[in-house]
Length: 344
Length: 249
Ligand SMILES: Nc1ncnc2c1ncn2[C@@H]1O[C@H](COP(=O)(O)OP(=O)(O)OP(=O)(O)O)[C@@H](O)[C@H]1O
Ligand SMILES: [Mg+2]
Image 1 (cartoon, rainbow over the protein chains, first blue to last red):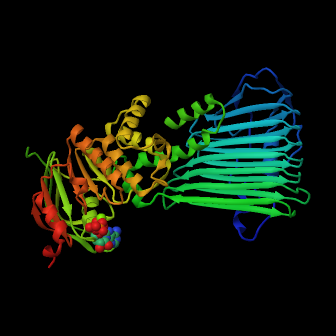
Image 2 (cartoon, each protein chain N blue to C red):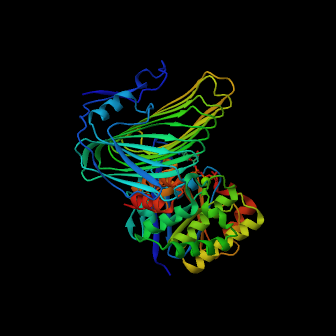
Image 3 (cartoon, rainbow over the protein chains, first blue to last red):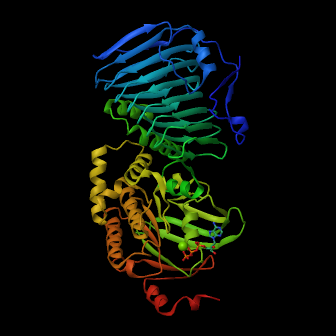
């Protein structure tokens, strides 16, 4: 079946064919993939038939429906403490069109850090995950996701959630390996001073494709969002980033920024960006910036003249981009894990 | 000491895209450990000669030969030529955003030797070498050449020379744009290279200041893509006094 996902909230004429994406020949999702973890003290785990958090998601309703049809249990992790220890969820996708459903709830004044490590046992396969979150007043949720999948893997990564007053969501995503990756996040910044901080880094090669849809939905006064996307494209790879900062009436004092930093290694890559700032409110500040670089012949010659071969130059540049984002992860053990993946 | 290191014969080269010939038949022989000076008016083709020896794909070799360490290198890629021991200090060093100076040099050494460097060994060696060049250590963590002043870029080139220890280095106007103190510092760096590595040098320059502390074995005058005169060190002073007029047709 074909499924439409990653639709931007306000369709535009300018990007007629990129307003959404039709994913072809999507497989029905079967059972749950294996995930191993141990729950740190202070975090309570529950399993439910359905999601208990009502929210939009970045990839949208069609993706939600697909996941719901798999009828997998929703694993809910909740805390009302300031939990320092990281909740680490190790996913091992087996390739049989698996689904996972997760809910993260951080009560008022609480804190939680979740690290999702996506790996696959097979070269090829399909996997989908939907994560919903709910962040209480003065609470902070950090979600770190690292994708390191087989070279023929197709992966759907859908996130959505709601913030209470002064509730902050930090999302760090590293897309290191895998063929087709579909990413989306929706953040409901409906309360005063609610905040979203997103940092994404990716490295794509061969025919890899990464399609992203990020939606910061501001209605809360003085709500904040900051979305940084940074990556490297090689060979025939392709990336499409849709980033919407949606300032609704009433979000006076809100500030939103999106920033892209892309390095294009080959002429044959395709790099597409749709930055959208919608404004129904006057007293807001929204900015978009982009820096798109190419490795020109002169730079290549300079680096080669020091005895570094072309392949190694590409690798060095790509790693540097990922590391710049990875170095912002507070936990040394996660940074170290990323470093090891980059050395592979 | 007459170990032939570099032998260039009848080298002609043109800009790859334009088919415009810039080098019209260059002959040059440099033995191991020797110091040669190339002088010539602006636009004569000095930088082009340096880049072409280093295998720059933007120049096409249309005739003649280049032998380095007894091997024909005209068809080798730049990184392979560098691995054999050739080094080029650029007239205009390139800015490389995203890669720190330290990371770049470390990667270069590891690529050359094929072995991983131990982090602390490398750090120590780097900071000692930076001291010789009067470079602030903080530059190690800055992106390579990005925002460096003209003089700082030239120092960073010599830093790479000292760290990579090539057997043959082409210095393309490493002394131009440097203040009095910086010329002295860079000269010390070059002396250090001579002392510790003992490699051969091909120094492209318009001035004599950088040569003061070096024993020059030969001077070549390049005019309009050709070497029109060869002489010893005394040539340099003569050119500085009388200009290139007598070599121009
Ligand atoms: N990539 C290029 N495209 C077009 N012309 C070029 C190119 N490279 C060099 N040239 C031309 O070839 C000639 C020689 O240039 P080159 O840079 O080698 O001179 P030079 O002797 O180093 O001069 P200077 O003393 O000013 O550094 C010049 O006329 C220059 O314009
Ligand atoms: Mg020049």
